[in-house]
Image 1: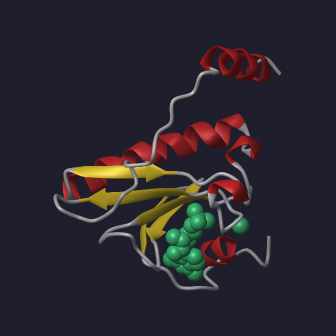
Image 2 (image 1 turned 180 degrees about the horizontal axis):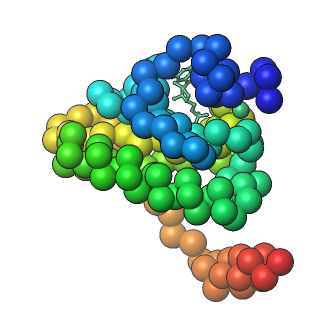
Amino acid sequence: MLSCVFCKIIQGEIPAQKIYEDSFSLAFLDINPASKGHTLLIPKDHYELLSQMPENEYLAFMKTLQKVVKGLMKYTDGVNILQNNGKDAGQLVPHVHFHIIPRRPGDEIKIETWRTHHDPDLDKVQKVIQSLLKD
Ligand code: 5GP
Ligand code: ZN
């Protein structure tokens, strides 16, 4: 998709600090990192949502995710992997991407500390989501 900023990075129209590339995927540094080494991994083909990726591309992409994570786990001792899927989930760039965010002791990043709630409907929610997964 021509207007997509990540497609432009793939096509070399916008510069980026690339760190890994294979036939399906590209990893590069986020221009506004949450921490030093904050990496984005994208498929080279344009899909907005993870669910739109063909299975073969998705599987290859997941292999590459593990490879990039292994590398970053040598850079720091912990990383958060975050994938904002859909506008309601905070996805700003409509091209599938994983954030791999290196973590360090004492950093002020709050990804894992979301507020939790008691849900009296766990059994109902289970049934609804189970049935949605059947399609
Ligand atoms: P989202 O909220 O869609 O999950 O995150 C999009 C990410 O893409 C943001 O963290 C943002 O900093 C990054 N980003 C947006 N435009 C560019 C760009 O032109 N180059 C790079 N390297 N990162 C970008
Ligand atoms: Zn794109």
